[in-house]
Image 1 (cartoon, helix red, strand yellow):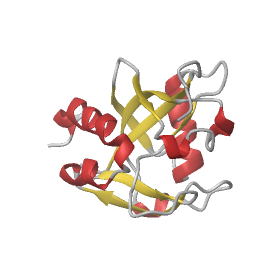
Image 2 (cartoon, helix red, strand yellow):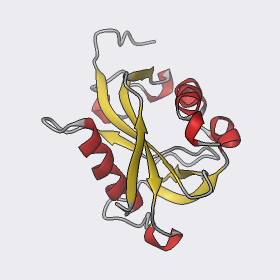
Image 3 (cartoon, one colour):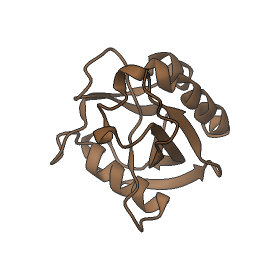
Length: 157
């Protein structure tokens, strides 16, 4: 096992996007085929504020900017990569991510979603029930997703 304690966390913006039925957008990653799903997220560029990064990432990954901001989580949520991914993702520069999460209401229709973007992240997508979110997520992100679902629960009724 490699000691990663000296590596920094990658600053990241995460997006929970809900539709009019309060279902949550999730996608299956192209680069890590599995039965697991995840919400859109991505790195924050140098000098970029987290909300701008979240909007940019959503456009890059989901092909839409038809959203309104409903809420955010004030603190940063951090997770460590599992050992089998250390050194393989983000060129081995980070031990995990420190994420700022936003809740967006999707204001478009399903036709406004296009995951076949310039640099696709997802192979498929769906709207999932809030109660199913955590069980469908890759195991090492379940704790973070539980926190996110709890913090945004008042919007998911």
